[in-house]
Image (tube, rainbow, N blue to C red; front, side, top):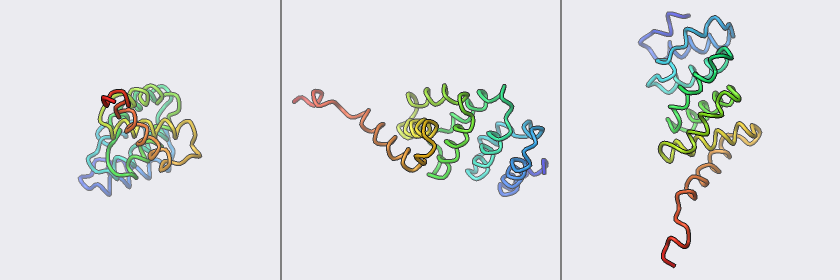
Length: 151
């Protein structure tokens, strides 16, 4: 399955990563490269995030969180949900990058970081609810105060 991770075909890369995560063998961790984590194909990247979160050794979790945080705001709803779940699976190692993500980047990336934080704090809330609340929070944070409107 490891040769599939270098396939020119996205479906083969995603399937190889999926199998690797299902095996749960920590020896598969070195095969999950930064290139796979940042793959241009959302399906491949999502699968790489899940596999990485499942296989990362504890001493490398913070470094993985740093790479994953570069993807805040990426893709559609399913892609964002996958990234948030992967970061949540990293636990405390992801906290610093989530905090930084809330303050930097595009409005979309900030909302995604806020939603991830909400999901980490309360996994039962669900990503849809967390993202909707985060989008409102980020939008209101950028809104002018009543006094700033010249009234």
